[in-house]
Length: 565
Image (cartoon, rainbow, N blue to C red; front, side, top):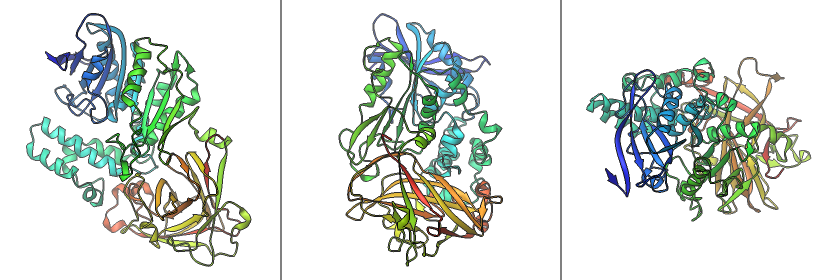
């Protein structure tokens, strides 16, 4: 049939090595000649084809590609049982080789798509199908433990639990269970209720029936053999293909995007025959628009991503070596205050950051406690300005009433910063702009009563008008048995979420320290390790008290990585 001036073949079978048949829709240009193949594998119904973020397959077909959109095992029309991630490496390998042999194919295959459709690219590429020439994974992770499920070292229940209900909804439809489908859809619409229903790993009969993998995710809080079996990054690094990494500053999978790129960056890959690219825009997971967080990022926010992806595949699949893809900077990112795209020769990973330039700001108390924005917490760039006579600052974290942080969007945190459960440290107005690029780090000398518990760091930028715009967040567990302590104190090291921002002159760096950032971060129950949090019931939510030392030689501080260092 013809649609949108291209030819479409629907429900085309692909039989895998174990005899299971998967089905795909194929979009082809009208006319003669061989074309490369773009392959997308997804679990949501192949008609959607990632069009919440990507151009419709008709657009790619009109540019001279055969586009294959396939239902993964156990989804849509495809045979088999769906277990997220479990079969995607072998199934992806077989599908790539099948797609390369389709009539009209030139034998070269590229894979594209975002989120789960990005993860399946890493899975397939980890086995290195001979015909796979390039990939373009967007907003995803090659290492699902560190980059997806536990990006801050704690289970991302805010995203994983509603997603599990989405997958269960489609599983219920496949089984003809209309009642369960409706209940799953209802649960998806009220994620806040889901997250407050404890324990998180119990009381979900619909998931037990239609998405039991959720309990594996929540039930493996440490990186173990389960997660190692789903980590495709190391195998990919042994024999990589060119990868175009696309992420969003406000996307919950930003850690996964940057982790994958920096691993490949360390391996090299800078020749015309093998190179990788990273693009980060001012986007949430959905949509890739200009007004994330209620802030208008301007008309350039789109970044021309459709054409960038097309040029990427034209280079690798069509042999258009002079189309400019190789000459582009390895890293391209949107800077939100200047509302412009900027470039870098590399992303400053941990190794590079240790050699680069940082701006250190030391935490200092004063005659007033640092509780709340009206308290006496200060940040100073000189050690000698620390008030060495100031008492340690103390906050109390009640797990029954966690401090809130809904997302990584650039929201105003100033109302929340009035809370006395938060220690707030504010720097002097910047005399000149500060270009931060990378992952800020906090080192806080602290002490705990009734731990273990979490120490959460939230970085904001205080603007002259009083807005405290969110920049980044991170956490670590403190008060654990065996923690390195001296006189009852320990030094907590927190790596915050990556950022790229030009802090304007007149603005001030502000740091919050508290015990929670719910629901973005899993709330620590207190008194038991965080690994027990998913199984904690309401009666196991306790109170912990944390002291933070700014004076007396403690040198608690935040380190901001600077671009160009």
